[in-house]
Image (cartoon, rainbow, N blue to C red; front, side, top):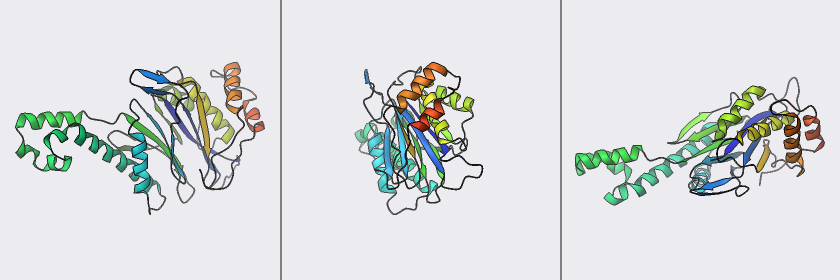
Length: 280
């Protein structure tokens, strides 16, 4: 499994922030676990599938993830950038892959597609076989989920999660969420800190990193960490390589869970930069 975190925050904290001042901070580990082996720092959990949208993946079987996100990209061709369209594309791609898995794993031996099975399977098969197939279908699932975040055409930030069998839950309120085996620990920390969409960017970054560090006690959450800051119409943020080291060091010295006195000042000194242009 893993832990993936996303949180909406403010770039340039102000009493009356304008639309477009929001950013989305995302943090995840880089550990990959497959069957009986695993490796830390192996893989990026991030899919940039639209000019303004990114997905982070988690699960015990992430093999379908690339195909699902590629399919979602194709489904978005020619569509307006709205939360409904983005969520529908990821949901449909997820459900289509689940249907293919059911047909390949269960129905192929009977030469049937899922639609045919639903329409006439009861008439073509014995009661015992039909009921057995229904039970197998009910127990078939994709062992992966996606934490999706980005901005619509009105520059409004959104966060949603897609889980088996293609269920979409939107988390624009509370403005953050986490998935993976470390999600409970991460979410507990974010709620404890009072993270919300009006939190300034540097503090939100610390909150998200802290939540990830706390989640490292969970099974299969790696120590290696990556983070990104997204803003409408901008490249992914750039940062000095020492930034994560500073945050972890300050957390270990003064956190757990006290808030380190100088950590926000140190983050600002290390120059988080958002540059104009399409995300690569």
